[in-house]
Length: 216
Ligand code: G3P
Image (cartoon, rainbow, N blue to C red; front, side, top):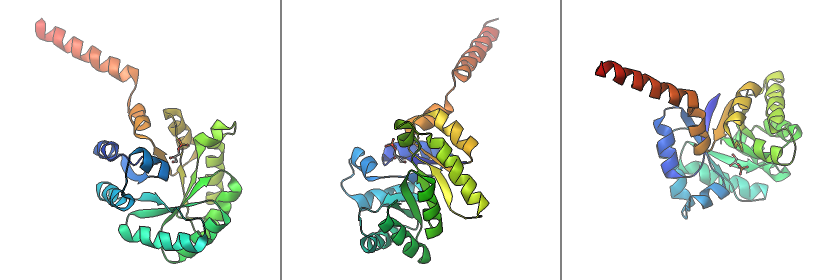
């Protein structure tokens, strides 16, 4: 499973990239607003130059023709831009046009297998089921990830699944088990994935023992 960072915070992206385990970034209007980016274009271009891999940037238009125009503009900013398009009828229409033009897309706000089937048939490069938001309303978000992965495998479709709306490290474990191709994680969750109390304790004990030897 590949890992993307789910943030628009430049410092977090720089810190995360240093680990050498991040291959992409996903943003959305809420994350850009949280990171206080007033200039959308320069923020996305900067993120693309740091990451050098797929960077999802959301189209804000609601109508298919306008989405397509916006997507063409977004994708001209950097070859790394992947255009996020929401799961609506207009969105499906836009994705089917964009896929024929070779513009990479990420079907976002996906909450059902039906939406995923449509997105894959339209030619979406990625599909992002929002796991945490489904869990929030009492559904099993990771079951949807697993169902979408199975469906893509069964029909031999090339669309990749990004487990999104990841809230904690156990979501990452479950995403691996569900066969997600990618999980997009907040920086805090990435750090939680690294940490284990037994590793911390183990390092402390090794150092203590080593220092004891030095004193003997
Ligand atoms: O990847 C989608 C993500 O940004 C949404 O996360 O926590 O707002 O549901 P959340």
